[in-house]
Image 1 (cartoon, one colour):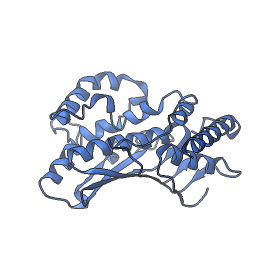
Image 2 (cartoon, one colour; image 1 turned 120 degrees about the horizontal axis):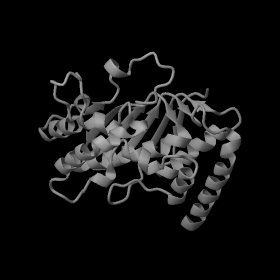
Image 3 (cartoon, one colour; image 1 turned 30 degrees about the vertical axis):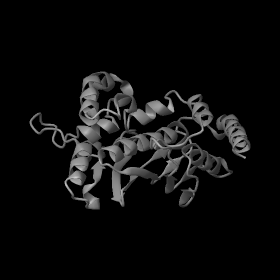
Image 4 (cartoon, one colour; image 1 turned 90 degrees about the vertical axis):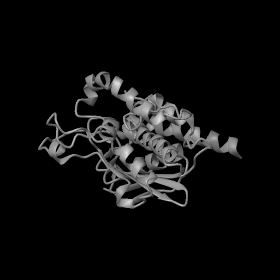
Length: 262
């Protein structure tokens, strides 16, 4: 297992590729911990990407990067230009939640659901907590205490089990740091699988940061993903030999991108 690794690229796609190449080196399979920071956003606060890289990753996985990202923030349900965008987002998600919950992959939960309808006591009497709404209202009220601007996903009453494999939730916590009119978002993962999940994780955190920045009247400037343990493929996923064609494809895409930018 490698020691601390910090990705230096600002572009989301390039940062993912940088970590991927590091993991594909001889002897490289996992990193503990890994820190990936994205700080290149366009004028709509969307992360700059190289679409061909996302498409190449999608070709290797049963779930697309956007599908993974939507578990953190359902971007397709949000209308940024609407004055009631927050209330509409929460209401739309509640309407589609029964359908989302039926999916086998979501049987233990979904990140956005825990962020917006956290159930501290599933007794049928205690109302769920919308953590995002609480963070937004706390900040708007003038309370900018850093420890108040965070949301928890891991729930020991449900997630502390003796299961050998659980899957959800790998993302444990999201913290929002506001300073001088800007917003920085940090997501902490206990475990992250790079090829099938990491790109979508980065994208989802960026989407979430864009939403929170708008609601808090701030400008999103940085999204950081910290993985306590970052592994190349899933335990029963691809071998390095399986991933060699993807590596060659990503290298070719980056070379073409650099030539265009020159």
